[in-house]
Amino acid sequence: MKDKNTFLEIHKIKAKLERVERDYPQIWSRLCRIYDDFEYIANNTEDDKRKKLTEYQSLVLKEFDNISFVYRVCSRIKEPDSLIVKIVNKIYEGKEIYTTIDETNYYQIVTDLIGIRIIHKFVGEWEQINELIYEKFYKGDEYFIEDYNREYSCNRKLSFLIECPEIHYPLNGRLDLYQETEKRLNIKFKYTPNNRNYRGVHYLVNYYGIYVEIQVRTLSDELWGEVNHDFVYKMKRTEKKDKLTAASDLLRTILLAGDAVCMYMKEHNDDNKDKAEEYLTETRDIIKKADQMLLGMDVCKGDDDYGISGK
Image (cartoon, rainbow, N blue to C red; front, top):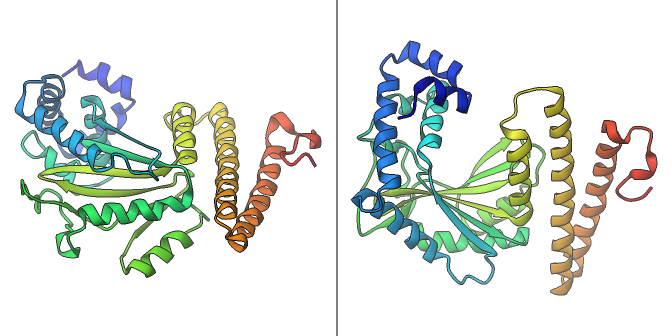
Protein backbone atom coordinates (compact mmCIF):
# COMPACT_ATOMS: atom_id res chain seq x y z
CA MET A 1 0.00 0.00 0.00
CA LYS A 2 1.17 3.55 -0.74
CA ASP A 3 2.09 6.01 2.00
CA LYS A 4 -1.11 6.64 3.96
CA ASN A 5 -1.09 10.44 4.00
CA THR A 6 -0.14 10.66 0.33
CA PHE A 7 -2.92 8.27 -0.63
CA LEU A 8 -5.51 10.15 1.43
CA GLU A 9 -4.49 13.54 0.06
CA ILE A 10 -4.54 12.34 -3.56
CA HIS A 11 -8.05 10.94 -3.19
CA LYS A 12 -9.40 13.68 -0.86
CA ILE A 13 -10.70 11.22 1.77
CA LYS A 14 -8.53 12.13 4.76
CA ALA A 15 -11.36 13.72 6.76
CA LYS A 16 -13.69 10.83 5.98
CA LEU A 17 -11.17 8.21 7.06
CA GLU A 18 -10.42 10.07 10.31
CA ARG A 19 -14.09 9.92 11.23
CA VAL A 20 -14.36 6.27 10.19
CA GLU A 21 -11.27 5.37 12.25
CA ARG A 22 -12.90 6.79 15.38
CA ASP A 23 -15.54 4.06 15.13
CA TYR A 24 -13.31 1.36 13.62
CA PRO A 25 -9.72 1.91 14.87
CA GLN A 26 -8.28 -1.05 12.93
CA ILE A 27 -9.90 -0.18 9.61
CA TRP A 28 -6.77 1.20 7.94
CA SER A 29 -4.79 -1.99 8.51
CA ARG A 30 -7.70 -3.94 7.00
CA LEU A 31 -7.81 -1.59 4.03
CA CYS A 32 -4.07 -2.06 3.49
CA ARG A 33 -4.48 -5.83 3.39
CA ILE A 34 -7.38 -5.53 0.93
CA TYR A 35 -5.33 -3.16 -1.22
CA ASP A 36 -2.29 -5.45 -1.27
CA ASP A 37 -4.41 -8.51 -2.06
CA PHE A 38 -6.30 -6.84 -4.90
CA GLU A 39 -3.25 -5.04 -6.30
CA TYR A 40 -1.50 -8.40 -6.56
CA ILE A 41 -4.53 -9.87 -8.32
CA ALA A 42 -4.89 -6.87 -10.63
CA ASN A 43 -1.21 -6.81 -11.67
CA ASN A 44 -0.17 -10.48 -11.62
CA THR A 45 -1.34 -12.13 -14.82
CA GLU A 46 -0.34 -15.56 -13.51
CA ASP A 47 -2.40 -15.31 -10.32
CA ASP A 48 -5.39 -17.68 -10.24
CA LYS A 49 -7.77 -14.97 -8.97
CA ARG A 50 -6.63 -12.58 -11.68
CA LYS A 51 -7.15 -15.25 -14.33
CA LYS A 52 -10.62 -15.83 -12.96
CA LEU A 53 -11.49 -12.13 -13.08
CA THR A 54 -10.19 -11.62 -16.63
CA GLU A 55 -11.72 -14.89 -17.82
CA TYR A 56 -15.15 -13.96 -16.49
CA GLN A 57 -14.79 -10.42 -17.76
CA SER A 58 -14.25 -11.83 -21.26
CA LEU A 59 -17.11 -14.31 -20.90
CA VAL A 60 -19.59 -11.61 -19.87
CA LEU A 61 -18.48 -9.42 -22.77
CA LYS A 62 -19.09 -12.32 -25.17
CA GLU A 63 -22.66 -12.58 -23.88
CA PHE A 64 -23.34 -9.29 -25.69
CA ASP A 65 -21.23 -9.75 -28.82
CA ASN A 66 -22.85 -9.10 -32.20
CA ILE A 67 -26.14 -7.77 -30.82
CA SER A 68 -27.48 -5.49 -33.55
CA PHE A 69 -29.14 -2.97 -31.25
CA VAL A 70 -26.11 -2.64 -28.95
CA TYR A 71 -23.88 0.22 -30.07
CA ARG A 72 -20.87 -0.61 -27.90
CA VAL A 73 -19.92 -2.80 -24.94
CA CYS A 74 -16.97 -1.91 -22.74
CA SER A 75 -15.60 -3.28 -19.50
CA ARG A 76 -13.10 -2.67 -16.74
CA ILE A 77 -11.72 -4.38 -13.67
CA LYS A 78 -11.70 -1.99 -10.70
CA GLU A 79 -8.43 -0.25 -9.82
CA PRO A 80 -7.06 -0.96 -6.30
CA ASP A 81 -7.11 2.77 -5.42
CA SER A 82 -10.76 3.06 -6.46
CA LEU A 83 -11.62 -0.01 -4.40
CA ILE A 84 -10.21 1.50 -1.20
CA VAL A 85 -11.86 4.90 -1.82
CA LYS A 86 -15.20 3.18 -2.38
CA ILE A 87 -14.92 1.19 0.86
CA VAL A 88 -14.09 4.31 2.90
CA ASN A 89 -17.00 6.20 1.33
CA LYS A 90 -19.43 3.36 2.00
CA ILE A 91 -18.42 3.08 5.67
CA TYR A 92 -18.59 6.87 6.00
CA GLU A 93 -22.12 6.79 4.53
CA GLY A 94 -23.18 4.22 7.13
CA LYS A 95 -23.32 1.10 4.93
CA GLU A 96 -23.10 -1.48 7.70
CA ILE A 97 -22.06 -4.40 5.50
CA TYR A 98 -18.79 -2.59 4.70
CA THR A 99 -17.79 -2.35 8.37
CA THR A 100 -16.97 -6.08 8.39
CA ILE A 101 -14.96 -6.02 5.18
CA ASP A 102 -11.46 -7.50 5.04
CA GLU A 103 -9.13 -9.27 2.63
CA THR A 104 -11.07 -12.55 2.91
CA ASN A 105 -14.52 -11.26 1.96
CA TYR A 106 -14.27 -8.00 -0.01
CA TYR A 107 -15.09 -9.78 -3.29
CA GLN A 108 -18.34 -10.93 -1.68
CA ILE A 109 -19.31 -7.38 -0.66
CA VAL A 110 -18.10 -5.11 -3.46
CA THR A 111 -20.37 -5.82 -6.41
CA ASP A 112 -18.50 -3.96 -9.15
CA LEU A 113 -15.01 -5.44 -9.17
CA ILE A 114 -15.98 -6.17 -12.77
CA GLY A 115 -18.04 -3.49 -14.49
CA ILE A 116 -19.73 -3.87 -17.87
CA ARG A 117 -21.25 -0.91 -19.73
CA ILE A 118 -23.71 -1.44 -22.57
CA ILE A 119 -24.31 1.63 -24.73
CA HIS A 120 -27.21 1.96 -27.16
CA LYS A 121 -28.27 4.73 -29.56
CA PHE A 122 -32.01 5.11 -29.09
CA VAL A 123 -33.83 5.42 -25.75
CA GLY A 124 -36.37 2.78 -26.78
CA GLU A 125 -33.66 0.16 -27.44
CA TRP A 126 -33.27 -0.27 -23.70
CA GLU A 127 -36.32 -2.55 -23.70
CA GLN A 128 -34.58 -5.04 -25.98
CA ILE A 129 -31.41 -4.95 -23.87
CA ASN A 130 -33.44 -5.47 -20.70
CA GLU A 131 -35.14 -8.51 -22.24
CA LEU A 132 -31.76 -9.86 -23.34
CA ILE A 133 -30.33 -9.55 -19.82
CA TYR A 134 -33.39 -11.24 -18.34
CA GLU A 135 -33.17 -14.03 -20.89
CA LYS A 136 -29.52 -14.66 -20.06
CA PHE A 137 -29.45 -14.13 -16.30
CA TYR A 138 -32.88 -14.11 -14.67
CA LYS A 139 -33.51 -17.37 -12.80
CA GLY A 140 -36.41 -16.17 -10.64
CA ASP A 141 -36.96 -13.81 -7.74
CA GLU A 142 -35.84 -16.58 -5.40
CA TYR A 143 -32.29 -15.88 -6.53
CA PHE A 144 -32.52 -12.25 -5.40
CA ILE A 145 -30.44 -11.57 -2.28
CA GLU A 146 -30.31 -8.89 0.41
CA ASP A 147 -26.88 -9.48 1.92
CA TYR A 148 -24.17 -9.94 -0.70
CA ASN A 149 -21.71 -11.31 1.84
CA ARG A 150 -23.91 -13.58 3.95
CA GLU A 151 -25.85 -14.93 0.97
CA TYR A 152 -22.85 -15.19 -1.34
CA SER A 153 -22.98 -18.20 -3.65
CA CYS A 154 -20.11 -19.60 -5.69
CA ASN A 155 -21.97 -21.88 -8.06
CA ARG A 156 -19.57 -22.52 -10.96
CA LYS A 157 -22.43 -23.79 -13.14
CA LEU A 158 -24.90 -20.96 -12.68
CA SER A 159 -25.05 -17.24 -13.41
CA PHE A 160 -28.03 -15.30 -12.12
CA LEU A 161 -29.50 -11.83 -11.58
CA ILE A 162 -29.21 -11.14 -7.84
CA GLU A 163 -31.63 -8.23 -7.51
CA CYS A 164 -34.24 -6.37 -9.50
CA PRO A 165 -32.82 -3.77 -11.91
CA GLU A 166 -32.20 -0.31 -10.47
CA ILE A 167 -33.44 2.63 -12.52
CA HIS A 168 -31.33 5.73 -11.84
CA TYR A 169 -33.05 8.84 -13.14
CA PRO A 170 -32.88 12.64 -12.74
CA LEU A 171 -35.53 14.33 -10.62
CA ASN A 172 -38.56 14.95 -12.84
CA GLY A 173 -37.17 12.48 -15.39
CA ARG A 174 -39.51 10.40 -17.51
CA LEU A 175 -40.33 6.93 -16.20
CA ASP A 176 -43.08 5.80 -18.56
CA LEU A 177 -40.81 3.52 -20.63
CA TYR A 178 -39.72 1.60 -17.52
CA GLN A 179 -43.20 1.46 -16.03
CA GLU A 180 -44.68 0.15 -19.28
CA THR A 181 -41.99 -2.56 -19.39
CA GLU A 182 -42.72 -3.54 -15.78
CA LYS A 183 -46.38 -3.98 -16.58
CA ARG A 184 -45.84 -5.77 -19.89
CA LEU A 185 -43.27 -8.26 -18.55
CA ASN A 186 -44.69 -8.47 -15.01
CA ILE A 187 -41.33 -7.64 -13.41
CA LYS A 188 -40.28 -5.16 -10.74
CA PHE A 189 -37.74 -2.36 -10.84
CA LYS A 190 -36.17 -0.29 -8.09
CA TYR A 191 -36.42 3.45 -8.80
CA THR A 192 -33.62 5.68 -7.52
CA PRO A 193 -33.97 9.41 -8.25
CA ASN A 194 -30.94 11.68 -8.09
CA ASN A 195 -30.19 15.39 -8.34
CA ARG A 196 -27.07 14.83 -10.48
CA ASN A 197 -28.87 14.37 -13.83
CA TYR A 198 -27.56 10.81 -13.99
CA ARG A 199 -29.61 8.35 -16.04
CA GLY A 200 -28.88 4.65 -16.40
CA VAL A 201 -30.13 1.19 -15.52
CA HIS A 202 -27.96 -1.01 -13.31
CA TYR A 203 -28.10 -4.80 -13.11
CA LEU A 204 -26.21 -6.98 -10.63
CA VAL A 205 -25.29 -10.49 -11.68
CA ASN A 206 -23.56 -13.30 -9.83
CA TYR A 207 -21.50 -14.69 -12.70
CA TYR A 208 -20.34 -18.11 -11.53
CA GLY A 209 -19.22 -16.70 -8.19
CA ILE A 210 -18.06 -13.25 -9.36
CA TYR A 211 -20.29 -10.22 -8.85
CA VAL A 212 -20.63 -8.15 -12.02
CA GLU A 213 -22.34 -4.77 -12.38
CA ILE A 214 -23.90 -4.14 -15.78
CA GLN A 215 -24.78 -0.51 -16.60
CA VAL A 216 -27.00 0.32 -19.56
CA ARG A 217 -26.93 3.85 -21.01
CA THR A 218 -27.70 5.72 -24.20
CA LEU A 219 -24.94 7.42 -26.19
CA SER A 220 -26.09 10.77 -24.81
CA ASP A 221 -26.00 9.40 -21.23
CA GLU A 222 -22.45 8.26 -21.83
CA LEU A 223 -21.32 11.60 -23.27
CA TRP A 224 -22.86 13.62 -20.46
CA GLY A 225 -21.51 11.24 -17.80
CA GLU A 226 -17.95 11.45 -19.12
CA VAL A 227 -17.96 15.26 -19.44
CA ASN A 228 -19.64 15.76 -16.06
CA HIS A 229 -17.17 13.39 -14.40
CA ASP A 230 -14.18 15.25 -15.87
CA PHE A 231 -15.27 18.79 -14.99
CA VAL A 232 -17.84 18.66 -12.18
CA TYR A 233 -18.13 15.42 -10.23
CA LYS A 234 -14.91 15.53 -8.18
CA MET A 235 -14.53 19.29 -7.90
CA LYS A 236 -14.98 20.96 -4.52
CA ARG A 237 -17.75 23.51 -4.16
CA THR A 238 -16.50 26.84 -5.57
CA GLU A 239 -17.85 29.57 -7.82
CA LYS A 240 -16.15 27.81 -10.73
CA LYS A 241 -17.91 24.55 -9.89
CA ASP A 242 -21.25 26.37 -9.75
CA LYS A 243 -20.69 27.69 -13.28
CA LEU A 244 -19.56 24.30 -14.58
CA THR A 245 -22.54 22.63 -12.90
CA ALA A 246 -24.90 25.05 -14.67
CA ALA A 247 -23.16 24.24 -17.96
CA SER A 248 -23.43 20.52 -17.21
CA ASP A 249 -27.16 20.89 -16.55
CA LEU A 250 -27.54 22.71 -19.84
CA LEU A 251 -25.58 20.02 -21.68
CA ARG A 252 -27.78 17.34 -20.15
CA THR A 253 -30.92 19.17 -21.26
CA ILE A 254 -29.62 19.63 -24.82
CA LEU A 255 -28.71 15.95 -24.99
CA LEU A 256 -32.21 14.99 -23.82
CA ALA A 257 -33.52 17.05 -26.73
CA GLY A 258 -31.15 15.10 -28.96
CA ASP A 259 -32.56 11.83 -27.62
CA ALA A 260 -36.07 13.02 -28.42
CA VAL A 261 -35.05 14.00 -31.98
CA CYS A 262 -33.43 10.58 -32.49
CA MET A 263 -36.62 8.86 -31.34
CA TYR A 264 -38.66 11.15 -33.63
CA MET A 265 -36.52 10.03 -36.57
CA LYS A 266 -36.75 6.36 -35.58
CA GLU A 267 -40.53 6.40 -35.11
CA HIS A 268 -41.05 8.39 -38.32
CA ASN A 269 -38.90 5.90 -40.21
CA ASP A 270 -41.05 3.07 -38.80
CA ASP A 271 -44.21 4.94 -39.89
CA ASN A 272 -45.35 5.45 -36.28
CA LYS A 273 -46.44 8.99 -37.00
CA ASP A 274 -48.41 9.58 -33.79
CA LYS A 275 -45.47 8.44 -31.68
CA ALA A 276 -43.10 10.52 -33.78
CA GLU A 277 -45.25 13.60 -33.18
CA GLU A 278 -45.08 12.98 -29.41
CA TYR A 279 -41.28 13.06 -29.56
CA LEU A 280 -41.33 16.19 -31.70
CA THR A 281 -43.50 17.91 -29.09
CA GLU A 282 -41.14 16.72 -26.38
CA THR A 283 -38.21 18.16 -28.34
CA ARG A 284 -39.87 21.58 -28.53
CA ASP A 285 -40.55 21.59 -24.78
CA ILE A 286 -36.96 20.61 -23.93
CA ILE A 287 -35.50 23.27 -26.24
CA LYS A 288 -37.66 25.94 -24.59
CA LYS A 289 -36.28 24.83 -21.23
CA ALA A 290 -32.71 24.89 -22.58
CA ASP A 291 -33.28 28.43 -23.92
CA GLN A 292 -34.22 29.61 -20.44
CA MET A 293 -31.23 27.86 -18.88
CA LEU A 294 -28.88 29.43 -21.42
CA LEU A 295 -30.26 32.89 -20.82
CA GLY A 296 -29.75 32.40 -17.09
CA MET A 297 -26.04 31.73 -17.40
CA ASP A 298 -23.67 34.65 -16.77
CA VAL A 299 -22.05 34.47 -20.20
CA CYS A 300 -25.40 35.16 -21.89
CA LYS A 301 -27.15 37.64 -19.62
CA GLY A 302 -28.66 40.38 -21.75
CA ASP A 303 -28.01 38.49 -24.99
CA ASP A 304 -31.45 37.32 -25.96
CA ASP A 305 -30.26 36.54 -29.49
CA TYR A 306 -28.24 33.55 -28.29
CA GLY A 307 -31.18 31.29 -27.50
CA ILE A 308 -30.90 27.75 -28.87
CA SER A 309 -34.02 28.19 -30.94
CA GLY A 310 -32.75 31.52 -32.27
CA LYS A 311 -35.64 33.48 -30.76
